[in-house]
Amino acid sequence: MIDWLSHVAHVLLPNVSNRPGDLWDATVETCYMTAVSALIAGVLGIILGTLLVVIDRRGILPHPVLYWVLDKLVNLFRSIPFVILIALVGPLTRILTGTTIGTTAALVPLVIGTVPFYARQVQNAVLEVDPGVIEAAQAMGSSPMEIIFRVYLREARPGIIRVSALTIISLIGLTTMAGIVGGGGLGDLAISRGYNRFQTDVTIVCTLVILVLVYVSQGIADFLVKRVTH
Image (cartoon, rainbow, N blue to C red; front, top):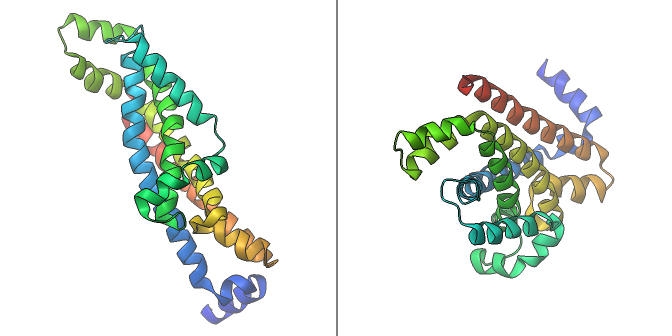
């Protein structure tokens, strides 16, 4: 049975089956870039997104000037195409990692490109919290930090999980673009071997693996939303 499956794989996917280790390494690199950048950008994005809500003119600690500055910075970095952003932050990437090539170097533009996007999504999710709940917490004498953690973030959990899934899926796509400029991963494999060497089966399999990663991410998010929804 195993020999038969191996023969079928060799016939249908000759270039993949000849060097299966390349596909595994590329998948691990993509998962590494996605997971690490999602973790860092997730923490920074939640902090920034929540801060934007708190210092808004309708927030619990309004600060119009700081809000204006942060809001414009978020809009600025969200508007820069990711491929151009990679080039722009190249000097910073070299300072932090010592190189501009490789999966670790790709983390710098991935994080910088993701934080503004995720922060805006978190901001929108937190803004959906019922104002009545916030007013009730204030009337009970809750401190700003208590309102942030016990009201804003707690009540916005389903929305934050949904936008987190959206961000991770977007990150998976960004890792493929990072691969084109030397970041490694499935994008690099699909282009360097699948496209440049006309190995169509490599491109197809890389695409299928990316689709699996996307569906798994969305499935986990849907499960978590059901668990935290009241």
